[in-house]
Length: 279
Image (cartoon, rainbow, N blue to C red; front, top):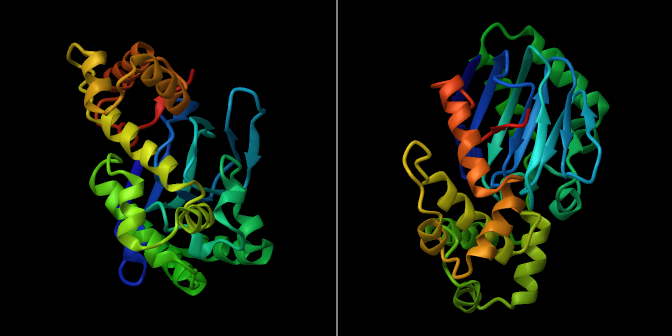
């Protein structure tokens, strides 16, 4: 599988972690993507893919791509074989300036690219991408499209400042302390966060806290789950296990087994960082 990525230039660099190009055979037909503070935009260039946002809902087909705000639970992604797309990994606040609706309306309900940008716009972008000869050219076209669509969002600077503080502390900073420091009411902050990030500040902090703890686990070594829970600030291990299942769809021990399987069967794969086999 070919994976090419790069960081965009100003003014997008404050909103986006990277733009990427993906082409080839996925490691598994179905992957679980644990909930993480990382909104995503996919412009699909191949066969349709499927997304299932919970065990109690059916899979939805996306032909032209999708936009995903910060999720609150694990979701399942079914790749076609082969798969081909360009996309964007946003910072938690980064997708909102490109949406025609508040981010909270898409929380755990991904929208198609046509729904957010319109049929003619996505058709034109697809035509442009089809003429590009190299991945970097395609990423440049995507970046130019994003710059054209960038709009001003009320409260974005405040949400970015607070989200950055949450990220810097891996979600451990008390939200009340942030609220006091900014002299903004908790009601206003919650409203702006839901409009821009899709979730409240407390929910974003939970996502950062959990993601930081789990990504630091070395699955190749014996795991002290009680220590992992305590280091992440969970004083009740049962609470940690419940949240683990909510964020990953798996129990802690099953998660370790699945991660080991991925790393064993696909060492150094382009997608080896966070997705988990679902089949």
